[in-house]
Image (cartoon, rainbow, N blue to C red; front, side, top):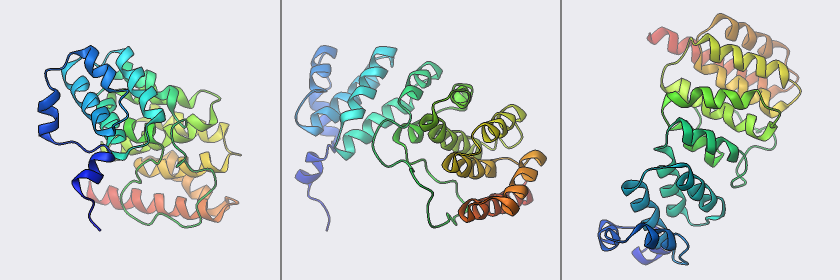
Length: 242
């Protein structure tokens, strides 16, 4: 059943008329609106703040803090859209929140394989937002791989793989070497290993192919072996198109 306009408004959806009504509000007014009990007003505040003012560190952190506690769908979408327009400095702040917002992250290996030819959209809300940012943030994401923060590493792999897949960054040795090293350092973490195998589909590289072939043959987890097989198939199909 289609939701009514009033129901959508409760979930934070706004119209152009809503934006126009508040477009002349001051920054102080908008910051106060961000605390409103009405979701659509919070969405309006995010929309106008992100369009009229610089996404400086303070505003990025405020949006992230708001996103962490936000429950309404359309307000969350507006927050993510605003954050995705950030730059490298914004990404440096955002990676601090990887794996910390929501509860949709993988905590166990899936039972079914992902059989589409597309790259799966990250489930972590920050990884998903980072994945839609410019490729200039990749060095920031790669720095996360060097940490001991397992939840963040798991989610950043999805963002790296997504960006590389859709920007045809298929032979960057620096990124490939970092992912392979991450695999060696986290080999006993099944979810990290599975996500890396999935990310490898973005790269047409001999070392990646050899790694995937070994995993397809010897990995202890059937779902990871299947994922390696799929990644090899994706690499092959994409190489035929180039």
